[in-house]
Image: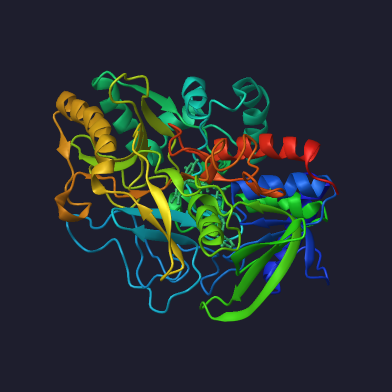
Length: 528
Ligand code: FAE
């Protein structure tokens, strides 16, 4: 561990222990040279590189810093026993599965709403899952860290020099994020991945290829969990409401390094509400809340450089609000366009009695069915766990498909929010691709779909996504490096730059793209 990362981790731990909502150096003036909205992937990369360049930077995060244990001694709750820490101001958990054996046993009432770690933003026909807290989506995601196929990346982002990405920025992102791969011997023998091996066998029986998917969860740690020499996390049903151990989330990597530069301050439980021009910089409206959601303080912070890293929905909403309420009326018309959920579809198959998937299932997926080169129905289907602690005979999948449909956001004056326009029909291409794949497996193996998991007996759920992308597209709402068109010193640095589809899980790409963009901006635009 570098001295800088150690200093950053110490500052993050100390802030949480004393209940502070400010991590890093405090500044007396209501001015910061650089302000970054959010602490997810794009934001974290930007903060580190600005901090290293000696630019004083303030990050504003609406969620909490997650490293103070609750009454049970744990920071996060598990998927099997969720409590108020699970969801961001929801009265009930909203896990992707609605029921199990048609029983209402998956979700749970939470009582008083609380600033929990996972949010689901519900629009008509589409629920968007996002992480809330220091580290954004890295706190709640499955850690899967694949790099997209180069040909597809070039198709999706033709303005980006793929050579530079594949030679320099993807390797840099993987190294910084702590990406590792499961030991093949462990994969073959552990009961925790029996579910993955069963799904792999069935995929091969149907003539499909499978791939091992790298992850930011430490597989060394996982092996120790199995031997019970360390506390269990992936083997204790922890993932979408946070992992207490094992995962290299951003607060342990980029953000620790960023704070360790001594130039980066993170303010938590603070939401950016408005953006307006001031001189050659921006004035940003802030709302500080407590964990019950009560507004404690409203204030403004001026900056010279403003980076938006609030995620596909968050960044798009901030810019749409600024344009439609007239604080930045000349923002480009393209803002709000080009949204997609990376073709996400969830489905499950019912296995034969002689094909059990095992009661102990690692929450960290490590295999995928790779049918991406199918000319008609491309799909990359991660083999997902169903970690309920007992035998289910179910194989669960989150498929990433090609879906040419795009949604768009508009600003709603009465709610002050962005509305996503996505019709149920727009999910049909995703379902078709997933169905083509799993029909073939079911036919080869003699199995059927599970219909007990999603409401209405549906075998496929394409009405929610884990991978929101787009809304402020690179090369349309911004130039090819994330500079917002017509607005000097205003930048976008997150998943909203990517037009709706990537073909694989997105955070490695979001990270690598942010590295590429900030390297250019530091060379051309930014001064300490
Ligand atoms: P993101 O990480 O969403 O961070 C945005 C941050 O901004 C959040 O912390 C927000 O709280 C904060 N924010 C938003 N609005 C405001 C505001 N107005 N003021 C202050 N703060 C604000 O952005 N991806 C993979 O590659 N592999 C996986 O295995 C994977 N699994 C997933 C599982 C789940 C359950 C979920 C929800 C997502 C998963 N993802 C996965 C997606 C991945 O986490 C997501 O693409 C990235 O987190 C997006 O990164 P951004 O930098 O765009």
